[in-house]
Image (cartoon, rainbow, N blue to C red):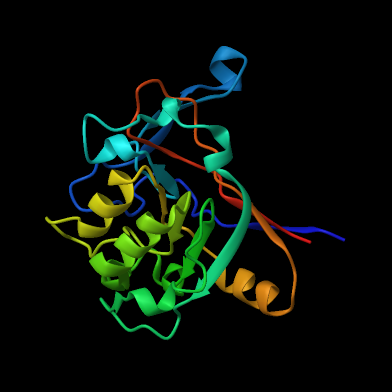
Length: 215
């Protein structure tokens, strides 16, 4: 029997955002008492909470979010257990050699979602440039991680973004609860994920409700 695991962080006013990104505010614009219905107003950036990056995020010439096929966001996933990595630790290519294959959705469990809402969250492990090139050259479809970014936070070089997005790879960030998928995978269960974004025209990224189905 299948079960579903929520891989998303909650979107709420004042939630953590990547340094320099727009602050998040949710506030009613209509209420049942006054207007006969409830409507919530949203102010947030395209990389709020659990989200995906389109290649366009780092280069104007690369595909925008609405130019990508839907199968980049849905399908079987393989989970890399990197929970042994310390704060700001680079994750090298040796961790990905067995999962880097064409069309793969690779999720990196760092355990860092446990630090969501704390200053420690910015100290997440990250994918180093060599590992990012390995994944890109192997033709993976999507790479997701628990943490603000596949690169260090903050960062100016964005080496992993450059390698992955430059090869057309979708990136998912601020994932949560990946430890549950590590355990499920170790027990021999198949894992499928959905990282479907909002249908934002000409966008560089979008928040997602990331969900895994464990069969």
